[in-house]
Structures are given as C-alpha cells and as structure tokens.
Length: 115
Image 1: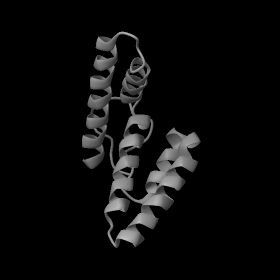
Image 2 (image 1 turned 60 degrees about the vertical axis):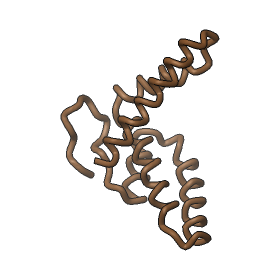
Image 3 (image 1 turned 30 degrees about the horizontal axis):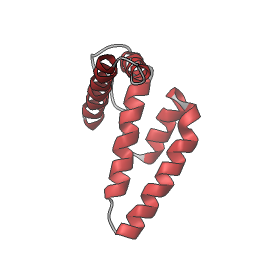
Image 4 (image 1 turned 120 degrees about the horizontal axis):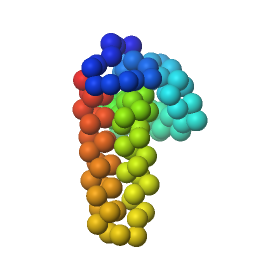
C-alpha cells in the first residue's frame, strides 16, 4: 500500500492496483461489497478473454480503486452519501445539484486513485 496523502483522515492507506491489494482494502473498509467485487472481477476477466484485451481488467481495477478511495476517506464517503440521497429529491434543482456533487466526488476519487 502506498503512503497517505495530505488531504485528511483516511481509514487505510491507498492500495496498490492489484486484485489482491484491492480486495484486502475493500475487506477493511466495505466488507459487505466483497461479493459484488468478486462478481465484477469474474465478468471483467471473462470479457478480457472473449475480447482478447486487458481493457476490461484495467477498467475493473480503476472502478474498484475509485470506490475504495471513496470508502477509505470519510470526507469523500460523507459527500458521496449526501449526494446519493439527494438524487431522489422532489425539487429538480436540488436533485441536479446532488448529481453535480456526485459527479464531483467520483471525479475526485478517480483522480486520486490514478495517482
């Protein structure tokens, strides 16, 4: 696992981009999602074989690195949860604001995960 950046409290260090490291990190911050991770990993590897391309595996790694980034950082996790809950707001302006915030959180997490 890599060293911690300076942007605040983190539950665990950012994991390396290997299936084993990502699984260990997810087990620490969101163990309830391990079955989902395994299912999407199986799909990605099957597509990689079918397509004769590593791109599905690379996408799987980045998706889980992003999701783990959110889960390991309470600041991002709280923003993510607030934004998700706002998506169903009856006020279209508030729902749109929640969508923008959700997009910002996902973008920030992806940027951090890519390092």
